[in-house]
Image 1 (cartoon, rainbow, N blue to C red):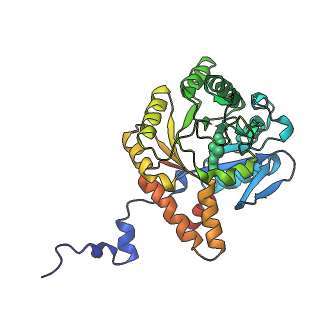
Image 2: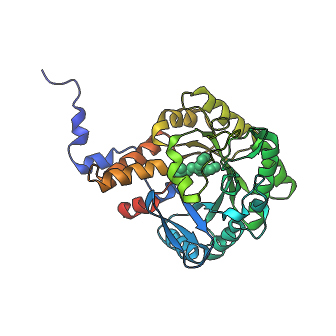
Image 3: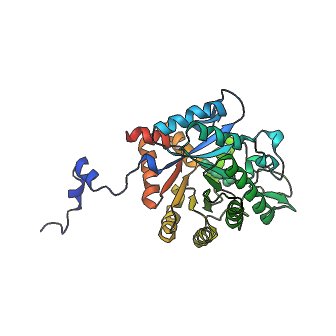
Length: 329
Ligand code: PBG
C-alpha cells in the first residue's frame, strides 16, 4: 500500500515549489503611504513606526524618486497639519496652497508618471480628531459628505490622480463623483475605503499625524458611529456594493491581516479592483516583536503580506513596500 496521493512531491525542493507557487508579490502590487509635514530638511522618524518617516516637501521629492527607481509607482499621501490650522470644519483642507495641495504638485513635478492618491477625510484637520464635522454630539453625515466632495475637488485641481475617501460617511462617493464630473475631472479616480473597520490597529498612524480623537464630554471618543463594527461581515458586502454603484473605481478593505475573510468575500463579489490596507498597527506589531528577537522580521513580513494578496488583494497599501521590494530583488 502507498498513499493515494503524495502531495509532498510538489514540495520536494525550492525549484519545484517555485514552479507551482500560486501567489507571488511584485512591486506592482504596492501603494506606498507617505506622511508629509511642513518645514525644511525634515525626515522625522515616527516613534511607534520604526524606520518610517514624515517628510518635508524638499525631502519628499528625493523619496518619491527613490520609490520610482525601485519600481514603486503609486503613493497615498497624508499630511500632518499644524495645530493652529485645525478647526471643526477643516477649512484648511480646501486651501489651494495647503500642505496636501503643495505635496501633490511636488510629487507630480518630481515624477510625473507616479500615481498620486490622496487621503480625503477631516481627521488631520479636525480639532476633535474626527473624520467628519462635529455637531450636537454627533459626526454629521451630510454636511461632512458635501465638504469632502469639495476637498476631493481641491485635490483633483492640484493634480491628484485618485482621491481616497477614508471617512466612511454615507453617500460620499456619489457626491464626490458628481462634483468631479461637473468640474471636468472625468479621469480623476476614486479609491473608496469602503469596508473600513473601527479597529484598534490605527494607533501608530494617529501618532504619526497627531490625529487621535480627543477625549471631551459630549463628543464620541471613538469612530464607531461611522467606521464598521468588527463583529460584522455582511455589512462589508453592502458597503462595498453601494460604493461601486456610486462610482468607486477601486474599493478597499482595512485593516488587512485580521480581516482576510472579508477580503476574500469582497474580492469574490467585486468587479472593480480590491485594495487592502496593511495598517500602522500591523506594521508596529511586526517591528516590536522582531526588535525583541521574538519574530523573524522579514519572514513574518513576507508571510503576512503574501497572505493579504492570496486572500484577494489586487493592491496592497503597505508601510513595508520598500522593504519587500528590496527583498524581492
Ligand atoms: C483617517 C485614516 C486612518 C488611517 C487611514 N486614514 C486612521 C483612522 O481612521 O483613524 C489608518 C491607517 C493606518 O493605521 O495605517 N481617516
